[in-house]
Length: 181
Image (cartoon, rainbow, N blue to C red; front, top):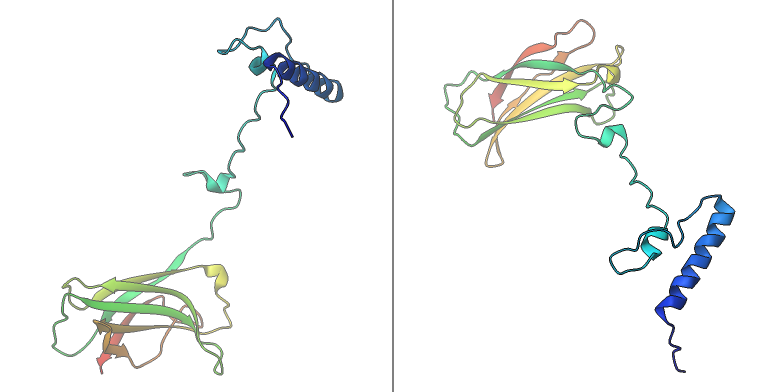
């Protein structure tokens, strides 16, 4: 089958006819031959409808803008991790502190927040602050913090006692004393 040759003038006429039909259905008008020609000398480019504007991102996607709802307020459990032994921590020691919901005795504790601190040669006491959403706290439940110190993935110290926080009159600032293992 041979392809038929169509002249550029025929294409322009067909496009103009389509634009006229579109304008009849939409009520918009397109410029005709009284518009200035584009760079190629055609009137076609100026007869096309303008491109719609790009969609704007939602406010939460705009850097520096806030969404219509405010972010959840944040509170924190703070304190220090320390130990009684007279042993210096190596510079690559890692302190991990976690805040957990320990209300259910027959279920794993739910982690509400944690902080990992690379000591970089700093010694105990090591300060920590774990942020949490106060809306996630149920005053009937029990919450605790625990800590561990590792070096190259090897456990050196861990908390052996439950350090209760937040509810039932317990503090939000604590000293966690870890023990050598």
